[in-house]
Length: 491
Image (cartoon, rainbow, N blue to C red; front, side, top):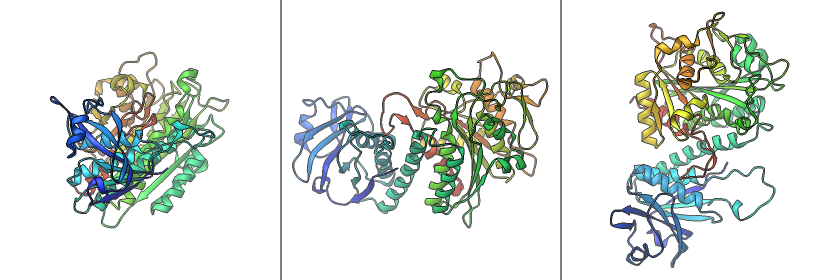
């Protein structure tokens, strides 16, 4: 994991030393418009094919402190989202250079934060297993200089760096193959990272899970030779007035268990621990930012494998707290481990619970590859959506219709984990299942809870775009950090 150094300079962009000077080009009804004062280059835009469309990057020779100019399209607007996207796209595409001068508009704290964050997010590469190098393996820039005279610019940029580092952490963990990342060593990594960050951690192994009644985790992990783990993370700064609990699904590989997936559907299933990685990265970032909010993170880690000891369709598991679940589909395992995590999280009586999971293929069918399905308490969901919009992530509210709950009825247990033979409303049924495990406040009202289904956007299986590479995207982490910040400020 390596985020480029993000530097601020008060010098004019043309006087800053660098290999590439990045300038923005806006798309307007009258043609491309250069977002810099250079009449000669403005006149040449049409002749070199510049349009200002997002992700268009053109290189032209330059004079002065930089060897070349890169023109990056920002689209039809220069708001924070457009600047973040353009900065990320430029740094993602510029490879084999060390030092980039990123001269996009950064005239206020919001635009500076967007440019810095986009640059950090876009300058990512995972090549931990490459043994051969080539032109396509050139790394991203190691240093980015942003011309800006914004007050307290260093603080703004440091926050952007920490946020980008959190997203990179998720990408690195998710991109690591399952033979090298499994419940035990992921738990060890989480504990080591937490210790460095000043976050307390507790790892529950199989014996501790058994003693604690974590039947969902044990049932899902039963088929693997590599047993399940639960990791609890605690960031509890002095003066924290709010308590946020984060619960993440961490299936380090998902074969479907005895309800075995087809071979093609198993490819990429190392990404099924993205929710847990996101919780880990968010808690570490919240601590690095020293946000005055208590955060408890729960990483629900298991490997879902078929074997002679695996949970069978028709078996009944007892979730932490005593609820019994008939397992009709062992490939609906994420909700089982999350149920344990949600019950455990509720025992601390937090003010808010948010879970994040690559939970259902139905979410991808309904919302595509870039939008996070968001369900739960109406007021909290509204806050999550506002936060996502503010940080530039796409979330969409989905309902939890009470009349669908009967589809989870079981003849022999409190509920079933899935409805067999009926694909309708799969994302909503998963949300309704999780809702059964949300605890109550002391006054008897439910603890506010939101469920984030990131199954679609967590893994970018098509071409890279903006600051998003192919592979793990790190979606949701910036929203979790933003929500913690919002709670810390009481808004």
